[in-house]
Image 1 (cartoon, rainbow, N blue to C red):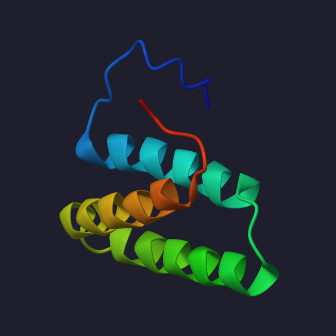
Image 2 (cartoon, rainbow, N blue to C red):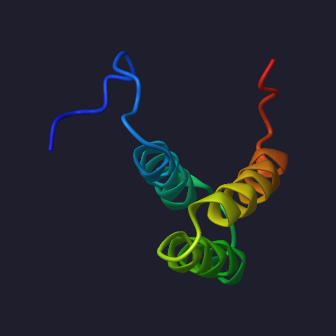
Image 3 (tube, rainbow, N blue to C red):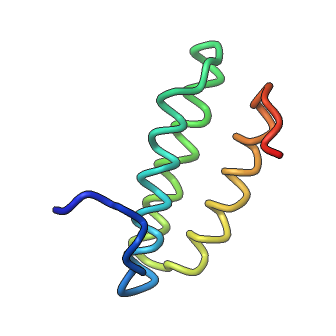
Length: 79
């Protein structure tokens, strides 16, 4: 699989969701939280991956909410 350079548009909604899931996974691994809290986020992430197998659109909506929660943990403003 080639590196994701984000210069080439994804060929399908499934590929776009896969890219976003990869990014979310990296963020979950990098976030500094107590182990129990980190496990809770990891479980939510796995649930979203399971939903993606059946319904890409619904998984995208759940992923948006998940990422918003992760953004709320950041102590650095995104602006």
